[in-house]
Length: 186
Image 1 (spheres, one colour):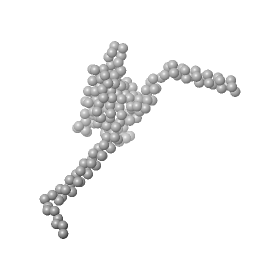
Image 2: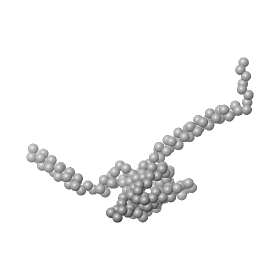
Image 3: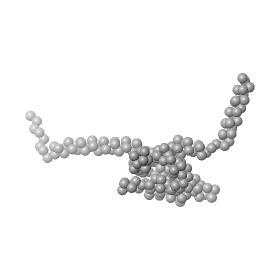
Image 4: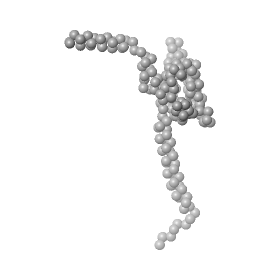
């Protein structure tokens, strides 16, 4: 029994040592809990984390190799949609300056799958684009790291609307009596 336990322990150590010496970075990247998309300098998608695919309702095998703005276009029904132009400018800044670029919270709708009703779903994102430089000092890849902050934005919008309503209600009460004399107190 002791010999079996010792052999099992040695097998576990050998397996652990092999894993530590050669981690599978593709698997580590894909299973990371954060939302990551990797682009080449032409803005074609080369990798995406599982979390990114889940939140954006995409399938890795269907988006890798495609241009990022073919996969994530602006909502054609939103005349104010500027996600493509704003995010493109951020990517170009990363390529030109070879430094990370953080965007303010960006409204950027994503396409829903037909199973989810089709069309676009309004989303808000915190976006951070970071360069990965090659040995020559130029950008080899861009890591697009995003966080879906839609719920937080909706809470903020609800609070702003609630305060505006309360302010209007207070002003409205005063407006109803404006121009009328104060009632006489007997």
